[in-house]
Image 1 (cartoon, rainbow, N blue to C red):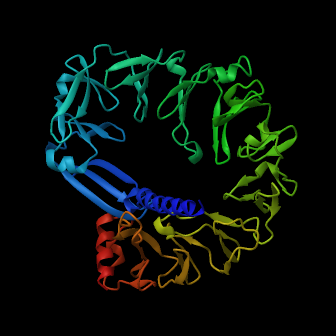
Image 2: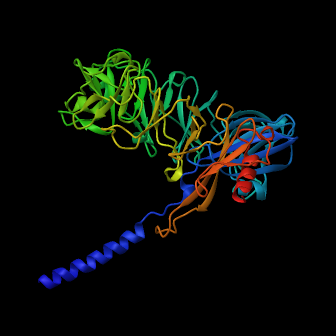
Image 3: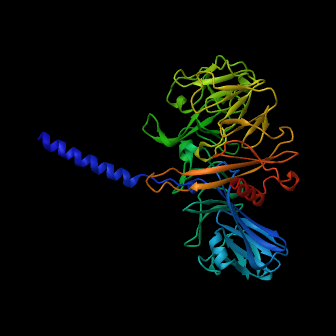
Length: 512
């Protein structure tokens, strides 16, 4: 029996290892790069432009620029755009274009009608053509478009928001509608008065995918896959709740709803079980925010950092060392300030402690989130010291350097004395700090993906370009790890943020 067990365990181990290799997620740089789309007139031509940047949203990765053929730019105007399309007009008529440069290159742009036959548009896709409302989308792999007649179109509509994979919210003064693209129908969202309905997306990273839709007395949670009326959550706990003065507060520690009437509702996406075994997503507390920053809540003469602690009757946060409670707010995930002192949040003790090594007047510069951790970590700049923060709770003094000059913020780096802080390294600054400007940054993708199973790392080389009154300068992640002076170039010829010039500078730097 013992041998069988060992044999079985060995087979299972090998199986799990194979499964682990199979399900291991691949990594690619392009998974993380934001995309930007523009449509504009240039030299009498219409230009579609697609720009890709590093996650720091500053460094250029690539740009595709396409001239829209056979369209005169006279009287060009963008009417609407969303994540997928541009709707625009020129003197020649109305056009819709999908934000896909490969299709634009191959098939061009869809003209949906002359000026005289289109009387009204709503959003990107709703067109009143020859007095008939149509729902129009470009046809994939074609210059044509799909045109569907809407038989029952409510009047005076406006778009509230797109709901991915679910539909489109619209409203008029009377109703809120959910439009179904497949059936071309408008379903009334019950109990909402259109003219007073508000839509608030939730941007907190812990609640991604949810949004709130509400009027004076009705409240919906809008998820990726469902629309849920949560008014009962409120009414079963507090009769007569209204949302006409509601403010939704989004913080890293949670989401709360301030009615401005003495009640704060704490939101939990997964729900909260009450004593009667009823599950709710909103729980009311008779409380107030500690101050105008609305990061901490005062309840029963105690202060709480995580609002869920109040529901669970857990310990309040001890802020007894704080000098000025009215100005207390977060600067980093763990560091607070009141303008007089800096404090660190001690998670284990659930209290704020004074940070004696940071001056109260020290200025915080947030971290720069370049891929592969190539950006700078957050720093605190005091009168004579710069402290470098890491991701850990700073229980002891963070590493620091001294400085005598003012700190010059150069977007992806900082200049002081004769130094440049870039990619968490201090290097010698060969430019004149006082006249120095940041021209921009580019990315050379060395290894875009890891091979699917992590065979080799994703690698990028980031280039940074600066100028002063006398010259142009570069620095990049790899060799030679120091600033270089491009002595043959004139600073007056280069402008900040010019993509073509930055790419030319990267090519020249690589050839040095």
